Length: 232
Image 1 (cartoon, rainbow, N blue to C red):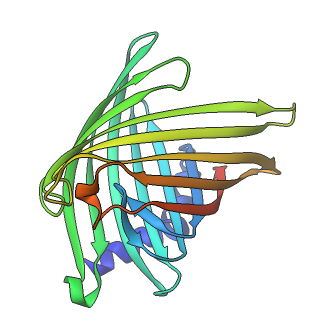
Image 2: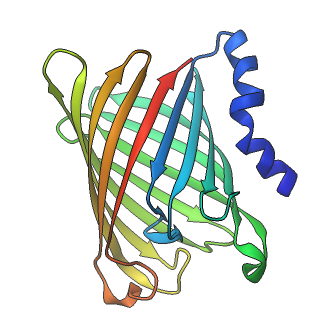
């Protein structure tokens, strides 16, 4: 398992040149964050460097995601997931996918553990682009959650600069917990600035717990960071 996760973390060095030479479009995002939350739950209490690499063939998009914990000096997550998308009407889209998550819970938590998940959702075209995603984890998470997310990008000037706003609301049904209810909401704002062939996006994310049943799991918090994004 450890060798698999390290391979995912090194995908940028090993896999990207091969894909690029095959003229397959690749999108790369490198977010740096002061903390890391997954489904509202803290998975890193300090700085992390993340990497998200995706490529699309027709209606199928394949993703690789990794997390490097700066304080620990080690890769602590490596995921693979893929989804299929279809536009049902001009204003309604549908997607379905599957994921294989790998987390390092440390020696005290049992080390590297993997878990499978399936998900599906609908996308409404229009203001805020509302998206509803339903996910079911079959092992570590052993539960489901429903995520409502919105996003809107506002151009600033004529140089490709934009203000990007997003928000989400999560209903948790024993997903990585034993509780059920509205677990958290968050909002984020980013300023995306093209610089040469990359886009830099300073970001702030504000998370708030919505149900005190999740008090020991989901905190109120603010996360800061910057994302470097580019295509190959």
